[in-house]
Image (cartoon, one colour):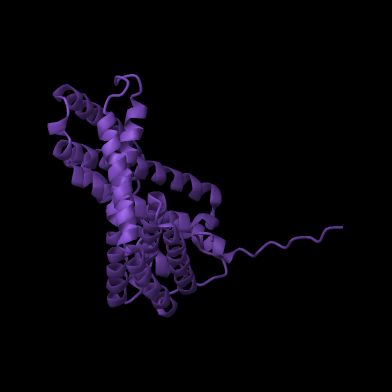
Length: 307
């Protein structure tokens, strides 16, 4: 299921198709809810669905947007505990791998084991409490709702305002993070960058080379900011749950490595952001609108029959 617009498909029809496809993908992933990674992927599909809605936000009724968003958030919240536990364990593994050689063999073994155990327990709890069924009911309702979703406007007029708003919000979040490096500001920037990444991916067919390059930049930016936030959450968890059971030196080393890695990630994100958000929002939107209009006016090339 390609997560993108089609040349001969109306925006209204595409919105309904894309929403249903992402929800069906999430439902399919939840069939294997005994795996934390499957739950993580289902949550990504929910975020993609929200990004689709945000790109046509001005073309759908406010009450519809609020209702869909509320249901998607409710479903995502049920998936959060096993997803968060999984990410904490993965984040510690990734960070210790990044600083390989700076930690003694066996260092943080008890923290690593505890995080993996917590991840397994949260995943089992999710399956035992049948949360997957609750999420499936919510998503099943949304599948039917998408079939009836009314989208006004056509072509770029339906999606241009949403894309411009996404870029504006990302640019504003970037500037806020520059002025105030509080973790919540970088996290907000990450959410806005991820929204735009998904939305740019929707436009891939209009000019694959250009859109792939832009999507790659946004994906990289989102990864830097996401890893930064995951490290922040990891440090909070370690300080709250493990400090009393660990040597002061070991925790001090871990905190130092987390901070060093966050500095690296934030520096890389700011450097990328300074380039990506150099355009004005209107200029960015006009440029993509030009690609879109050219693409929609192109005739589908004929394929010559083989001899």
